[in-house]
Image (cartoon, rainbow over the protein chains, first blue to last red):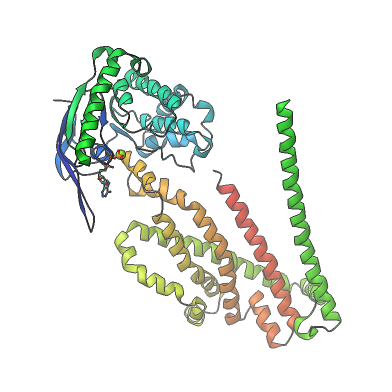
Length: 259
Length: 266
Ligand SMILES: Nc1ncnc2c1ncn2[C@@H]1O[C@H](COP(=O)(O)OP(=O)(O)OP(=O)(O)O)[C@@H](O)[C@H]1O
Ligand SMILES: [Mg+2]
């Protein structure tokens, strides 16, 4: 039994006027401690799939199971970091990061200390009493990550966490997140538009087709790339080979859809 | 070197702001003085009918008399308490109603047309009914103050609740938060600025409700002073009441603004 089983998931969105088939028949097994990236054209249903795994959205058909237990509602074992940080502007950084613990009634001195230690690791301890509006985009993303990690989820869902950042900040954060997740032995699902980021950070890369999203292909990242930090991985020779392969496949997908 | 230049231009900037503020204050006070001076002059020189429009020194003397015999203080404190209770309870009740509507989407849809109609109705027209129902007491005057502000508060606050960024709510849901937690952690704090600003509007509305209520009950308070002054043709008394109302509502408005600055830090 895999850690996370995604079994024949399809999802349709209904409005009064339209029915949109967002994803169709997606199946995937993920092992504990794996880092998986989702790549695919815009609108192919990546966020939809993440919301389903997080238990926020019930799929039209199919099921998702975490450690053999079917997911029907949000679970403290799953941490979901949304496409933008959505920090609460009326709360300080510290209060923002403690939100999950408060909501799940796990706010005790141990957990609080753990959260402050995470803030420290991310270099945010000295802004803990500031408000989100006083922070830069990169800092806010890190706060959102701490907020997600504070409840110690075993599975992390990251929806384009670095997309709004400048290149330099992004590279630094990739290393930081990679290290943090490896140290805490977390399983992670990362949605990204950046092929390089997917290769540098993951063990496996799942490429989705255009809407309705289906799994087009799964790429395994070589052992040598997996063992090094994202920044180093980007300079490895294996990196560019895999980059070319995925690039070609993505291009073909987009050409097909534009015809 | 550079920091010195920056400091200097920052100092200039601050001086500029200060200068502007001083100019603003100067003219505000100037207008105040000019208005009263002109009024005094116009009354004394019979440019306006002093029987009808009175003039400041006459009003001032009347105020001293009324203070001396103790009646003014009673009227003022009665009205003040009624007004403060009116706008606080009106805002509170409106917020509670908005919360109930937020809780039940269906209820809010059902009640929507009724709210719109109630809101456009002139609430002071309910005065006689309220007074007969609750008796000619403080209770019915406060009820007037509440009635006049509660519906509009409900509508404005409920709209604010509805417009809260849905992704903030999603964040709470990702942690398994329930409806009550969603309300407490997101919906209410996100709408706080709106609630405070309705408080400001309600200060004004509550004055209207309370004064009309006192007209009708005619026992005590500034509204009673106005009606009484009108009946005995003592317009100095009417104007004294108006001036006091203006001063008190300015003070209350500033108090709410102060509260706003205290509560909303981000
Ligand atoms: N709430 C909704 N109601 C109706 N249609 C929706 C809704 N959310 C998403 N969709 C549609 O479903 C499809 C998949 O959306 P989704 O957000 O999952 O895509 P995505 O892969 O995350 O895209 P992106 O890379 O741009 O973030 C899109 O075509 C979108 O228009
Ligand atoms: Mg998306």
